[in-house]
Image (spheres, helix red, strand yellow):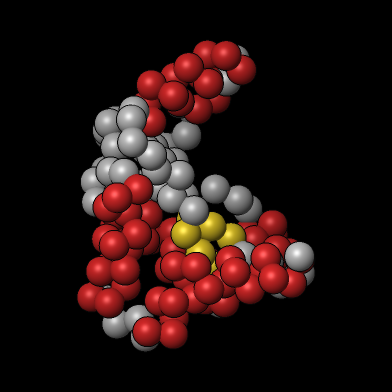
Length: 138
């Protein structure tokens, strides 16, 4: 959800970008229904753009309704029309495969294993990259 130049600048500074998975935030041209596959399309894109050492997951999942929260926040801040102005997508109540915090990271890890990522790469993107940046900052 950031332009390439922002992602590149973040990586140049040694930072890490977290891939979000809140409903309707990361659909992709190949996956118009919001599932773990559409989220992982964004993950692969960022890895190809800046390298795996600058990518992590910030899925923004929680127990409860994301959609109700999105509507309340967009109404409160007057951005409802803007949120609906992008590419068409199938409205969903949750991201299939990343419904809540109890499921999302194990499903991300399962996807990474299934798609041939090494143990070191998996460790990096599910927390290692973020820890590295936090250690450098603190």
